[in-house]
Length: 328
Image (cartoon, rainbow, N blue to C red):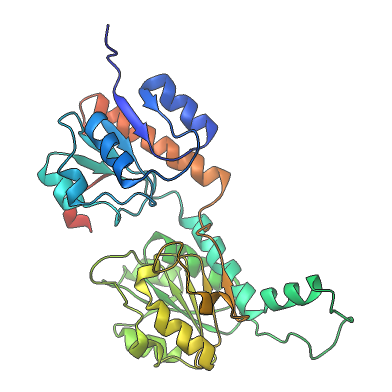
């Protein structure tokens, strides 16, 4: 007899405990190699599955959704960002989309602070010098960086991650400013000891560090462009643990090479894993492979949310983390 369980295709390897639970509950096809699926493979999965579990490395556009099978009714994204999925087209075709919000804020905020420290205290330069074998011992004038305490931090996007960054920045003695689509409630603002800046341009001109914590949407594409970065102090640094498309990466690279900005800490890049080689060569830049949320705890919690979304859908209810176009 045919299986009564939902057919679920998972595009990448997930934590073993998550894959085990998915396999117990559903008729699951796993990606044993963890190699990103090709466009053809993704399209084939859309044709056959009841539920697709993609990740941010899977682009699901209108053309692919047009070829989806009649059985596909849920795209249960493994991740909070859904800019790689055409949510509007999915909705038009009667396909629900869910995500995994609310579990990455603390880990991403930790990495944001780590990147601040790494760039401002010149970790990359010091480590490279030591590992090269050139180090001759301590010197009072070597690798002088800057302390975080007393510096002005400008947070671009005061959502869950931005708020978590603000709390940590307060502990380091930084002055916190923020720009957001909407001003947060005065009680939250007071608790975060954060000052609202209605003008992004004015905030950029006055801060020492910019932390990007907003999603990628049409309105945030290149929000930090060449014109805005030229408003910043030459001593300022840029930290991005959100989405690479928010920053004009070519303009950032040019300014870093020209000394018009002091440094950058980047966990995400405008063109995915295609990183500008001129950016990679800079000593005043710390680059990480999209690992801000890479903790065991976060990955398991993301998987648990995926399971809850699918199980709720299987029981005839809307997934608790359903995403609709009006939310984007």
